[in-house]
Image (cartoon, rainbow, N blue to C red; front, side, top):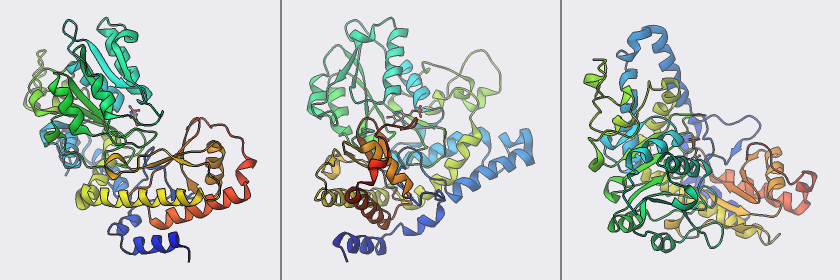
Length: 425
Ligand SMILES: *Cc1c(COP(=O)(O)O)cnc(C)c1O
């Protein structure tokens, strides 16, 4: 028996989360799903909570807003309560609403308050495009030229960023900083406490995009004192395509009127007074806009129940073991073809939930993997991301992936495919 195979079987035997595998549905054509950081799998509990909310509509019609076990009027608050422990926030600091893109617009509109020379926004050149688009349009709305006022910290290797390089750019003309917790390509995890402290020491507002860390890396946002955060729920939180997102705003900012206002941000006791004067909720709920998208929130309720049972400590522990196993598998594959480069940092404290590698034939290796029952994730021009989910991936999945990749390289079967990307990559 190969050493890696032996290791997989031992790890699977000791896996304290193995019972959760049966809670999920696997795509018929691809039993090995390693794309949980793009769209997590559907669980039976997510399916039931969605069906339940549809039944409430059937049974209660308009009264569904206040009747049933999970009334829609408080749905966002119910979900916020379950989300808070995942990120070390107080319940009052979280609201489940919108998408990353709209929530970023909301928070930047609320917290970006340029004064004199202090008017620049700092982000990084590896940022996800939508985050950059938001920052640019918010600057334009304030009459600023993004070419001049949006600073992007440069990466020295094209994959990762040095915290010191970010801190070096925290000058007294910077008003607000937005960074990811985990970089979507390389999987590098930034040191949130250190960056937040450095920003606050210099009087700068700082927020994070948790898209690639929520549900796989625990956070301590209240104690870290960062000002704001956003995340989506369809990646590691398995809420389904377009699942409603969330935002965090630190309690010291509560009680103000948000930059963008809407009636669902009202103090609930005043909302149905239908007054033209807006009375904001005195917590993160104030940042909601319109009527919540109940059917796009309902699957999250079932899914978060599992996270509540497991706790983020166990999730992270398994995730780190899965990703170190993957790293080892790539080191072994490199004995065949010395072309894989693992671009994810080695240390646990600098690694999120996935392993990313580069390879000159990345696009066609991914296509070949898909025909062989493995779903990875390709990012142009040459990155393959492997994102095992602590809830539904097994070590045997990773061992099988290793064997399939070995076969692909040995027989060069990827050469049957063109090395170009498909529309979703
Ligand atoms: C997935 C992702 C997004 C997506 O934003 P949506 O508004 O949900 O479409 C944004 N930022 C990052 C870093 C992401 O990984």
